[in-house]
Length: 503
Image 1: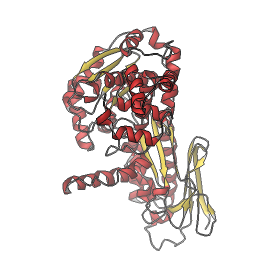
Image 2: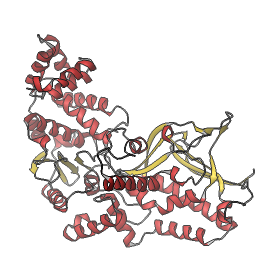
Image 3: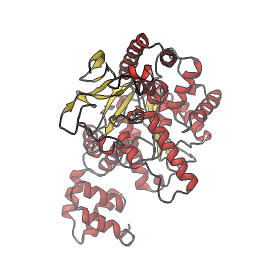
Image 4: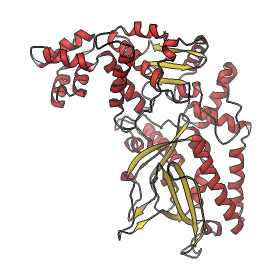
């Protein structure tokens, strides 16, 4: 089968896509002319990896995925607004840190879900699958299980061929992984390649379907006002349903001008402080809560203290073992602040840095706190008084240290940080901030020394450490285990007896 046309856009070292058009091996007997002409091969490169390379049953290496490619082109064009602007998964996932693995963990509803809830769960999962996963476009072919979604001002590209719904008899060589591509680069590469491919197909078979794809491409590049509103609503992510999200975004913008979409042409909208904050809240967040938070933005206007400005140090958050990174950053920050390894008063630390800490009552108790900062706003932590995680002294201190990590290290937009800490926030950032908080409040050198010097049974030694740092028994046990000062079976035994040994 002869290659009749080939086009590659991008850098294979960073991000690139290549499409080759090949003579239909079935001579057009089983597909309409425009689909038949789209028979070919595609290859997606991320950070030097070819995500489409595979081996067949004979062991021969195939450089790309081969099939009719018109459905793939339609997938990107028809789902562009969602792919380029929506990031939150349809349900909370506590397993995995990127879409390809997280979506496997939430494919099925919990056993307790009733019929209606289970049907809604399945419907939402499949909608996300069809809008974000390339495998959904295979239509009888064998495609790699690649997922694409928005993450800040990046596109997260992740893959998991261990859970590929239809891989055999091929085996894709890249099994599981993830990478971030700036949304600007993703848009430039993807739309340029699709445009060139559609133009080539139009030369061969100028069908209505191909003309529609070309027209849609133009609307993506030069969006009208309603499309810009949709992009803004998807970035805010206040509702799962796009129509409901759009209606709510417009309604809120009438009351809060800062929630209006940016006057921005081109193929995507950039993230902003509100979109970062609300993309990590529940899709059922109440309008009153949104208004309360936005009003706090206005209250925070002012100059940032030099102490905090000199402290900010954006560090990419790893997808694997983010907790280790959190531990390292906590000790680094303590050294930078000359805090030593003893106990600290987190309120005093934040006050010295010029970080404003205020309380507000949000209706969603799952949100522990909201933190934000940009060039025009004082770094701010809003403690949700409705959250049970902020009621006790230790958990409140841990929450503030958690938010400190976000403010200092999570700058993803050049000078803007915004997150609602809770179950809907990005998992890896929450894992890092959780580990940071415990290590910042209970630094390893002093914890290790105190634990080794303590006498008595294991639970009594844990109590000594917990009392010294004002920490909960559970948090101390978990921390000792993460520092490898106690074994996992000892951790499980102590937590199993928690009622008996509760402080």
